[in-house]
Amino acid sequence: MRAFIAIDLPHEIRIELARWQTAFRSVCPDARWTRPEGIHLTLKFLGEITDAQVGRVTETLAGLGALQRFSVEIKSFGFFPDVRRPRGFWAGVAAPPELVHLARRVEDAMGKVGFPSEKRAFSPHLTLARFREPRPQPALREAAEKQAGLLLGRFEVTQFFLYESKLAPQGAEYRKIAHFPAE
Image (cartoon, rainbow, N blue to C red; front, side):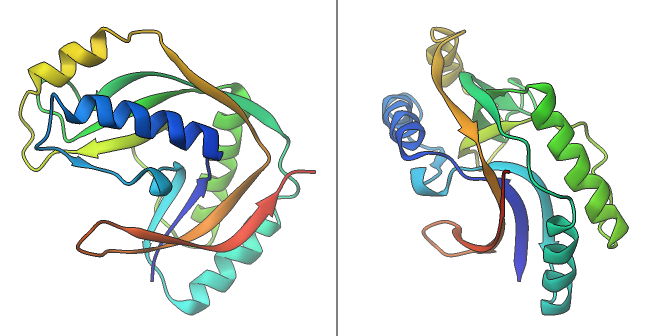
């Protein structure tokens, strides 16, 4: 199965992101817009894993101990890897030290069970759209720049999950496999 580790979003944040996706879709209809119910904050993408690996991953993550609760803010919009040749469009996540620490703990734990370390620095974001071709999106860039600094919401992180990802014609479908709560 294809798997990843992520933080789920509250319903209110999804509604706000969906509202902005609708607004931006009018200036960039060719993008592949993610389904709001599938938007999540990825801590670690694992890729294809076996049932045996699911067990090891679950045990290892449970062994990290209870998650310390912390708050994150969703603010502004941007492109990855950059605005000149974007492959995706995102909502930003203000990364408090606790989020960076959690991502590092997950990364280190997964390294101990054989998953390669991510070469790029952790860059928290919520993917709103992907582009078939990495080419400039001037109308979307302009619309997003008008919202610079906009606070889209804030929420308390109280848990994270191991997810299964199934690719489907209408977009990826996610199923929670394991739950890792806060104290």
